[in-house]
View 1 (spheres, rainbow, N blue to C red):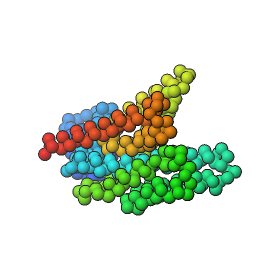
View 2 (cartoon, helix red, strand yellow; view 1 turned 45 degrees about the vertical axis):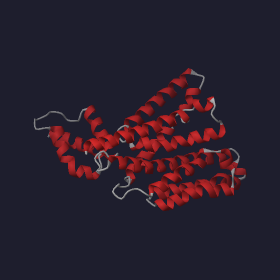
View 3 (cartoon, rainbow, N blue to C red; view 1 turned 60 degrees about the horizontal axis):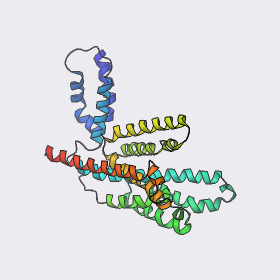
View 4 (cartoon, helix red, strand yellow; view 1 turned 180 degrees about the vertical axis):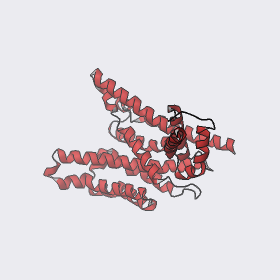
Length: 298
C-alpha cells in the first residue's frame, strides 16, 4: 500500500514532463525511483522532487530532441516574441487605466486615440501568435508599430515601452516563419507558462531598492533576490527562457535610451542596459553549451 501511495506521488511529479515523454518513459522512471526493495516511504524527498521538476523543464527545453540547439533557438525566439508582446499589452493596459483614472474620463476619445488603438492592435497580435497564426501576428505587429502612430504620435514621441513592443516583436515573428520543419512549435500551454514567468520577473518591485527608508529597501531586496533566484532556477533548466527574456529587457533599455540617454539613471535601473547585457551573454552561453553537448552526444 505504501508503495502505491509513493508511486502515485511520483506520477504527480512526472506531470512536469511533456505528455509524450511520460507515455514513453514514465514506467521506467517509476521503477528506477522506487527500486526493487520494499520501502516505508510515503513521499519523494525534496531533492527528488526538485530533480524531477528540473528534468521536466529540461525536456521541455529540448534536451531530448534530435536537434536540441535548434529547438532552443527557434522556440526561444517564439517565446521571446510572445513575452514581449504580452509585456507591451500589460504595460499599455496599466497606462490606459491610469489615464482614465487621472482625467481621461473628461476626454475619453483622446485617450483612446492616443493609447487605445495601439493597445487593441497589440492585443490582437498577441492573440494571433498564441493561436498559432504566425503570419497574421507578423502583419498585426507591424501594424501596431506603424498605424497607431499615424493616428496619434503620443506613444511614439514619448518612446513608451508599449510602443517599442511590436517594434521588437515583429522581427522575431518574421524570422520565426523560417523555423525548420523538424523543429516542433512550442506547446501552447508551456508557452503560456513561460510567458507568465517572464512577466512575473518584470513585476518584481525593484524600484523599492531606491527608497530612502531601510525597511522597504530590505523587503524590495529580498523580493528581487527571491524572484531572480526562482527565475534562474527555472531558466538554467529550460534555457529557452534565457533567450525569451532578452527582448523584454530590451523594452526598458530602449525606453530609457530614448528618454534618459546613457546617464547614471539608466545604469541604476535594474531593467536597463546592465541586465540586458547579462541576459544576452547568458543566452549566448546557453546556445553554445547546448551545441557542444549536441556534438558530444553525436
